[in-house]
Length: 206
Image (cartoon, rainbow, N blue to C red; front, top):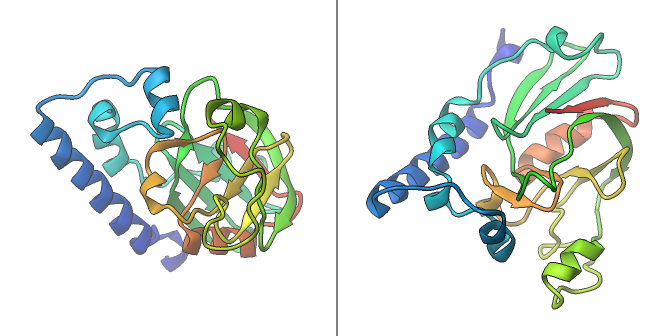
């Protein structure tokens, strides 16, 4: 039964962050839908413009059945829900966890469908994509592994070029629209996912 419980640390950090965001929104008086221009200018959608998602973000750490999304768990399975902003991980040994995530800034940057883990990177370095440089010409052309790296301390490359599941050294991004297409987790959570996933683990983004 323990393996069926939601990671309490994940829930606590996620719910507290969402509650704080909700309080800020209440003080602001009202929220409204963020425009693509707002998101690209800030590199995250401000909570004051994200009101419709706040309650969902508090309640979205709900359990799901792997059978509804995958045919088997021979290589484990990962479901990334960009609407609920969570990652579900099922292990062949009965392991199951739900982790809060960051999601892409805009619908245009969001890719959905089936892919798989193609490479495990234990100490990822980082290079900005052409679209990132177009938005922010001042970005460094290369960041070595370490505390300033946008990919955090672990990364899983997916079958689509430049798409990854990775950690982050900026915890403000978790629970928000804040990535250029990737799925980001707290560093302690990506370590758990990284240690269990293998090359070939199926991934579904919805």
